[in-house]
Image (tube, rainbow, N blue to C red; front, side):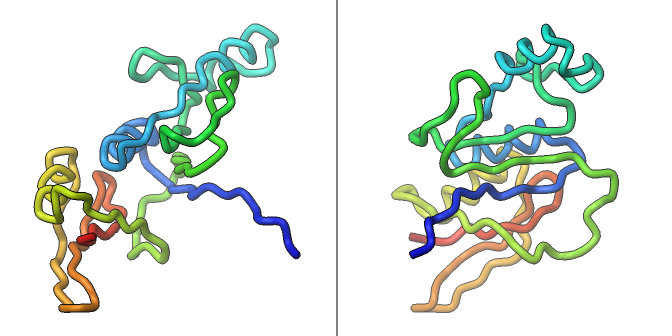
Length: 154
């Protein structure tokens, strides 16, 4: 039998930190705090100051951010989650086509309309509503950088 593998979803961005903030708020996740690791790497000379930025009162890796599920384990020294996790990395090229992979967010007890409205207040935009009867009801939306995702009832 094959041992199950750990994984994370990596999302290319123009500005990793604000997009991580959006997804942390959207999903109820926590933005990872790598400041202890960064302080260590700077003190040993293994990380140049140019690779570090400030965001939300913390030192962060320039061009990278991650969010993790609050109930999953993480390494307190590195801040890296060991479970459900999204990593955002800045890339030089802009997004040009539809995503080939996307996140589906399932509405909780408050319902689909309430979740869609909450996500809009965080910076998401509605694109198109789909109602396929017994097959499902969902909204196609875009995050603040234009990445498509779906918000489904149930």
